[in-house]
Image: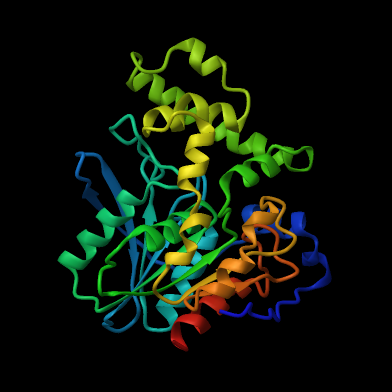
Length: 319
């Protein structure tokens, strides 16, 4: 599919990638979304919490939304997507990935960029229990990579899944890890590492036989975390094996439903490989939009609605 020309042009202040990223992460507030939590049990007896919000009238359409690294269903980019969906006759369910809903999950595993079996379990649960005939997927950053990988690796998608929109996606994980660890992104990587180490401490307390103090103390960088925990807990040889196998870039050519990928050119988290122009040109189902501005999940337009949310709705309703 030819590359989509972007018409996003924010106010001058939000043309700075760091400002748009930081403002959107720390200061944006989305109000008016009422969520109701439902807990589901996964095949390994662990759990995932789903936070539902509904349109004003009964509908047969559902938007499934997945957050990014160390996010949750109450992040305002999640609420922004849920709100615009609800306002336009679409129910929404925000997935809290394992361990992200405010309660420690029970298994040694948690979530990671390529753990698509949990998404498959959620879809199986929803399609079995609820009567939606149209399901859309919407993912941010890590959640976007999950969705793209799932769509590309799954031979037979549930018939209800019709389209997807992904935003600020590190489709090439190794390159994005290297960008995150660069000096210009130290404020982000430091915050991520702090949050991840807090969870690693919880895992050490839960499973002292699997993580010792020496392992914990060796974690100084995000890559260290993936070497010590992510790779070992989820069956990879090391961090680089995890990045290679979990990157969605290699799966984009197999995506078989209309899918929009919005990656800002000034997103400091993304390496050059995260702008998959060739893949989009070769796959008629993959639409790639590369706005000049937007930072990482920071597509400010108005306080009420972000450009990425408006584009999501437009893409899904114009199919």
